[in-house]
Length: 117
Image (cartoon, rainbow, N blue to C red; front, side, top):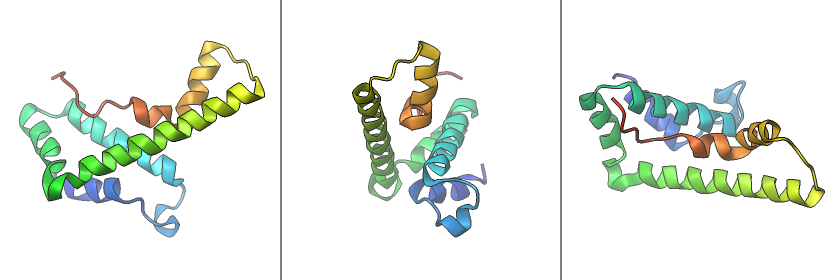
């Protein structure tokens, strides 16, 4: 689990455009959240506790960041859905789900705490 000291600084702050290279800030956030979710899902009980304990460090700053990401992505999804409604665009369920995933729902749907394993 040497990667925790690498992944959590990336979780806390999106790198500048020069350091990010080919991803947008939103893609960066999605990738980092996916990695943390995969760690929580795949790790043994002891290692999962290590990952979760990172959220308790520094006065729970990582929990605050998690809430910040949740709020920004839910707002982004809400604005997108309102825009779709105003424009009267009709989509089938699969198209709607794909569009929602592309507009913030993916990050919202990641389960950070898994009871499995």
